[in-house]
Image (tube, rainbow over all chains, first blue to last red; front, side, top):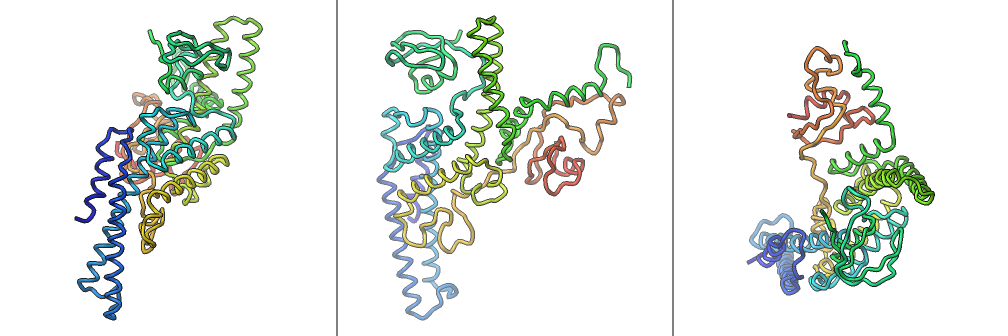
Length: 200
Length: 241
């Protein structure tokens, strides 16, 4: 049935948790593309048939004309579904770039969900943002929430090594150590799950 | 108008508010609020951002000096808080704009009104976004499509206009929040009615649903939007509260 595979692809995307990527469904994707090419071939052969019969393709309203129209519309629908799939995934990837930090290594659970060119897109977009920030000489991806306190207490969850240089001091981030850090410094680490904020 | 001793008269309140509203922080707050609330990208406040950056720089140096000279730590941390908040405003303002660009990159690039509202750096950013997205979509989808169906913006060569998902535009049929300077509602000039009626709270938020698509209205008269010659008419005809 025309468009069913594309519909499945889009449905799979829509049924996922909002903001979370599912693993890139390469198989289904390829099948939809194959379908597109089949439609195109059918479309072309119908048009050729009409031309051989000497009929004006745009206006002759016979069965072939409508058949060709159906193929064209199915093709465009498949294209829309594919583009929507890629575009929406790209949107989620951009959000990841904002949340997790630019050009940092993404955790492998996320990395394995990327399709082929999505990893490259993530890197390109991070670079683009970084370039903008350096042109303004202002970091736009810290301070994501309105500041309540200038300093916050954090506990380090993973061993990050010693001698890490922060904006006002250098610190030794051993596992389970607690620190009193500036909010802007700590945000990046908290977003990547390497530290947690201690409230109360 | 009678005003009891110790209370401010209406004129004094107005003067104070007028004075307050011209500080850069207030202007930045207003720009930030407007940007956050509107679905489309608004004109870039270049001068304001420049001044804000300079003032932040000054503040940072002041705070550093205070810390080194062993100033009262409470005062230092108060200055630091203030500094953080202004920095947050500035960053959030720029961030909201960037996110709007990311969402509507093709539309903004195509439409001159919006394209002219970008700063130079934002324009370059939009260009890069479009290039990256175009490349990404090309590699994965478009290059595998049959000829005549390979455009990013058009479904196929016979489409009359840009009808693909990437070229969608922001949705304007949404509820609006109006704050401050709500001077005209339903044709009554509230200014002249002070003291005669119970005073409406002038700095409350009014949630209004648009009856049709609308452009951003700057109710304090600082900028006129095209097509409206009086604020009175604008509010009466557009909004049902």
